[in-house]
Length: 301
Image (cartoon, rainbow, N blue to C red):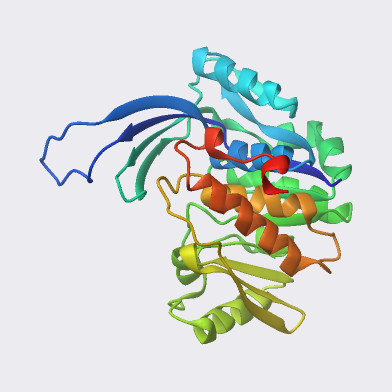
């Protein structure tokens, strides 16, 4: 069983279901409104824990009702919460999600407490990182704290997984130098490398650019087609499972969290781990919401 520590975002998601996305200036009716646990970091931690990993979290919530709700939800999952700070005078992160009948979504995020994590807070909880097999991060929380977490992991020989989302035009070199696995989608890959992903050849070129930065494993998620991988001169596409998607929220987070649970730190079972992550995300997209849609290990088996 892997030990996984996630540093990143914790959001209370507020989801609105509609027939189709509203156009600018248009007023439409929603068929359903509901709240659930979310945030890319929290989603990835829940996915790892439900797949069997021993999971810890480093992050922050506000000292408000949303923060109490998120701590309760993550505690219910039996995720180690010692690294989650409760901050006064700042709101817990929230996301506003619109989902249409095709399962496509539009997401607006208020970072709140996620932007107030500090490198000093990471150092206080460095033992969580040093005891891990993998550390996972995204771009929904304070960047300096993510860099510090990856530096601590790198010095301890702990493998790091970076999900570069939401995409940034320029990723700091010091973060890339300590990244072992990078897992962008097609859009994020183009923003990172300047190469438009249209086929396997373009993915190989993009991967070569990322390898040149010192990153050992490149995973490019390509939606319903599956996932492209490149490591040690080997590359290929692991196909997705064919399902009818109703809500793609948290699909990528589920993939990364589930993959980190079964991936060996020497990456010798990478294709097997990708297949497991693909299977997990294929269940997620058949359900509504972020964390409520993430599957458990027994469902995947």
